[in-house]
Image (tube, rainbow, N blue to C red):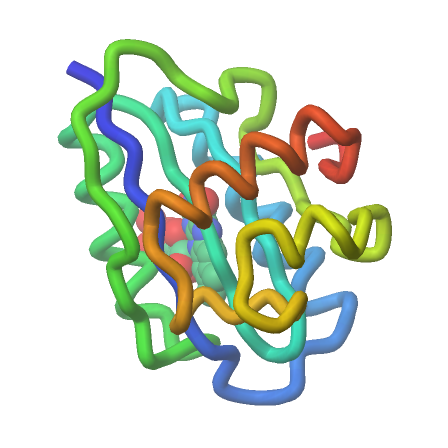
Length: 140
Ligand SMILES: Cc1cc2nc3c(=O)[nH]c(=O)nc-3n(C[C@H](O)[C@H](O)[C@H](O)COP(=O)(O)O)c2cc1C
């Protein structure tokens, strides 16, 4: 049984490129063995992550992620049972917002700025799908 979980959170301290790279390295080291795929987006001090995989694996990993002191204010945006993965190609793909078309962001947001605290889970999921289609995801 597959699920897709999406959450947002705020980085607790200014996050350097090396810190983000370390998070992605850990993710890419753990996730394949756990059957987890997904995307991580970091912009303006805010993370949005989508995790897909078996229910037990995703739930367990989410619990450990929530306890990570590198972020706080974790909000669950969506949690769905799914029949297929939307992002099977990424052990943890990194979203590069600079590669995004401004009109695409405006399509799903109030002001054209990515603020998941003011977006529905459904809008965020659609935006992630379009990011993939438009090549805004770095190779994992
Ligand atoms: C925003 C964010 C996203 C993360 N995503 C993942 C992830 O997808 N997979 C993962 O294994 N760890 C991820 N981590 C790291 C975990 O919080 C945790 O440090 C790591 O899973 C330690 O796992 P362990 O206790 O099983 O060794 C993330 C951390 C942060 C701050």
